[in-house]
Image (tube, rainbow, N blue to C red; front, side):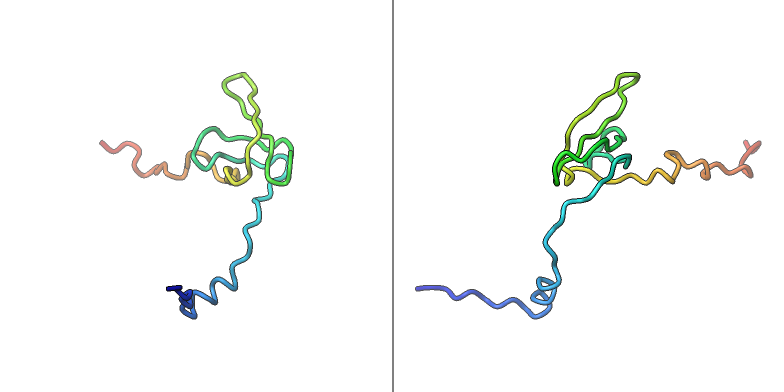
Length: 96
């Protein structure tokens, strides 16, 4: 007995039609990135292949470097402070 494939519901078919093939994330020299799993902030030094980049970072005073698959990295927005100074509320000063 052979099974016939079941048709997908119309809303799923429409979503499948819209889905584009996954393109690798594009990074350029100087982008600040981090591994999706965490770790140090790194700077993209160069594109090695279409799907890999070489990143550099510092461990204390020692420069480190490694090549990563772009799917393992996420961009970091450096326009925001690492620790929000805006959390400080001057109105709380002097209260005990």
